[in-house]
Image 1 (cartoon, helix red, strand yellow):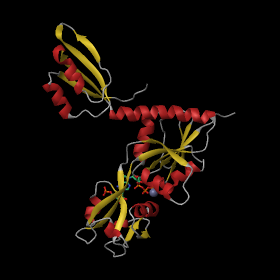
Image 2: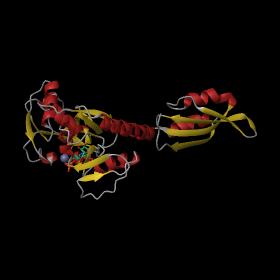
Image 3: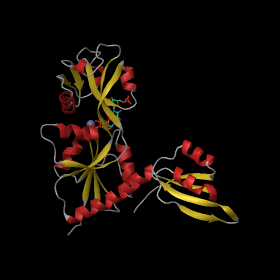
Image 4: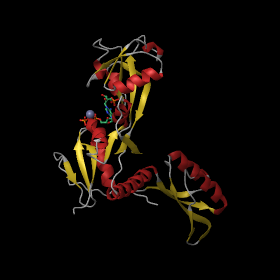
Length: 294
Ligand code: PRT
Ligand code: ZN
């Protein structure tokens, strides 16, 4: 009997495609991929990748065509906000493709508050999320549903405001629009179907998730090494951001100093290094961590 394999839905091309593949690669899934292929087989593990449009990913997962999917929170939340939500749930927040769904209004216009949006027309590709926002804010809006180029709607006088994805803000600025409020903060998500998987498939998912969490945690963590005078050791350890008990090692031929090694689970900023130096630390090294487990 052939071994059961799990199938993961990923964006084929677009803003999330490269980062989604890079994350899986960091988990040891090597993809001999030609972008034209719809289905890619992973050699090392019983996993196949289905490369599709991002909009189709939640449905592929909820219907069981795929067991997992990587999709933007904006796309997933819009589906879950619709009258008939899908049978899929979030397994892990992946930290890339960060953006926000925001309401933007013409610069220098008359709409300066959420209340002022009442009875106005708002163009969007996210009608369900916009409707929920209006309800939560006790306003009534006319939703003009568009499939793209939402930012041109106010200039065309077909809408008073827009509700669209913003990342750097450059698109809004180029269209003389200013961001008024955030409807949803978004990042890439790993989602799965709410249906029960076979024990074999569940074991593959568990193994992949453990690797994935290892990569995500490692991304936020740094390995820090420094020399510390014995007399200031406790002050220096207290300055290490988000570290568990550090390793203290003797230094050959030096009695009053030790080497301190620690995994810091938060970013190590220049300010932290300056404070460590001011507290007496020397030879401070901050190294990236590729993978973590346990
Ligand atoms: O072809 P397919 O349907 O798969 O892709 P798509 O064209 O629908 O989506 P794509 O590739 O543009 O984006 C995929 C996902 O990336 C989105 O669903 C978001 O989760 C996330 N993401 C991150 C963004 C952006 N940043 C982004 N800047 N999605 C869209 N934009 C667009 C936005 O619509 C607006 O037009 O970029 C413009 C705003 O960008 P700034 O930097 O000018 O503010
Ligand atoms: Zn899309």
